[in-house]
Length: 268
Ligand SMILES: [Ca+2]
Ligand SMILES: [Ca+2]
Image (cartoon, rainbow, N blue to C red):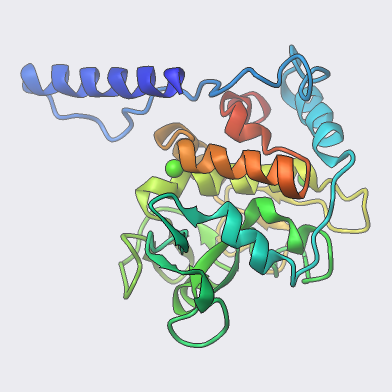
């Protein structure tokens, strides 16, 4: 948390300084991502510490794939009611793209319900809803049924228009842009999936690329934008709590990029 606060102070200081001297603040003011915790470095991440690039990716793949408890698709409903609980209202969950707090009991498929959004779109690599990548809690979030439909299987990029219940998220013909508060969350979920699934478990080798219109290929873009979002929106307490709950209660693996966002730039 201290590192996050220091980054925020630095960002404010830089912005203030730029305003004082009459400069236009450039679009990219985010400081590079830094570790949010080192609590697991001598235990969970022991074999990854000190590595970089493909060696780091390979080590993290082994770590986050070991001794995982896999959830069924139906078990996700109850899990999401815990991982995505509104910190200010224990009867509700927070919808990822909308930012709306909605009753846990409104899970379902009707208008006004929330359902299970696959941030790594299920058609990109044919994840299916069989137990596996299509039921991995790390990238599945509550979302309004209609907003989930708006996102569909689009790749991520900047640009587009807001829509009903978008919460500031935008869509255009070939991409989806999450609201600012969850841009980094989305980036870290996508990149977790790329490290977790390497094609050695009967499912596709998922990877980011720098394109949109990836269709059914096992890729999601745009990598350059996801890297930018990782810097602009560092992990907050909601995202960190979610990672901890998945680790301790459900899957028993962690998203390394929530603990060490700087590993994104080391690998990609
Ligand atoms: Ca965030
Ligand atoms: Ca992969």
